[in-house]
Image (cartoon, helix red, strand yellow):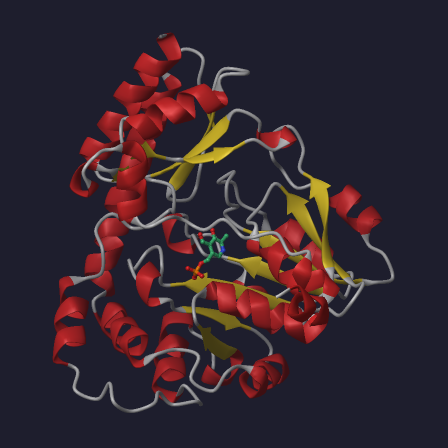
Length: 363
Ligand SMILES: Cc1ncc(COP(=O)(O)O)c(C=O)c1O
């Protein structure tokens, strides 16, 4: 294997694994708790799952033996209604992750870079590194707000793009339209990842009319509960969309995902009602966490809450949660030392997390 490994591109050989969420059985094995008792709040997933009509439609669809449409005609038409944009400005992807990957492959070559306000979603840096490029992290301020001045100063001749998540993962706060506009004026590609849009209602989609260098990302993983089927999208200038359509794998979105997306849009009233329940539960969880002495939860506009644990006790408390079968996302980077991110789940899951945290923090 060593000789074959030597043939590999050096930057691929050096690549660090992206830590995705583990399957339920693995979490169950690690904690010694039966899978049905595991509380899985580390992936910002939708606790209600897909709409019942989606499950029915997936079971009765007859044409899984056919390839999907490489032009994504039905998908792009349906998405055009959802976004209020012409279909030629939309590309559907295997999750918004795939659109991030395609954008980086379109724009970033060896030695080139993107600017990211840190901390943020890990896939931007990961996908840049796959292209032999890199991400320049520009620290957010004390309140996790974007530092525009520092971002502008970080731009180098090799900079191609800025990537923002809004609301940001894991901090939960949004970037304002004024901040996005400011960076769009630099002429760089500006990608605004609105994966959590439905939980807050803030969007910069209308800016697409003014700025050909803007790309907005959305997904059906969170609000529509389709994370396992992998379907997201990018909205962009028609020239960019045309190029992305020509370079994507022809059948990048599978037919099950297509069926699920079409029915989710028809059933969006039900799904958005669930989103409202998740938002109400987030606010309840925020109130409960804020009452625990020693914890500092950060206000969030998404379906998760970042929470600062007592200094120096992050790992111990996280391990204590795991041993009770409660899985949150743990961070140990300097800016997020002793922090966990809890996805908003069902009310009984919130209660279990809050009870366990209160006990572990005081104990
Ligand atoms: C900010 C952000 N962007 C993109 C994604 C990926 O979404 P998808 O499931 O559509 O690939 C996530 C997933 O958690 C995320 O937090």
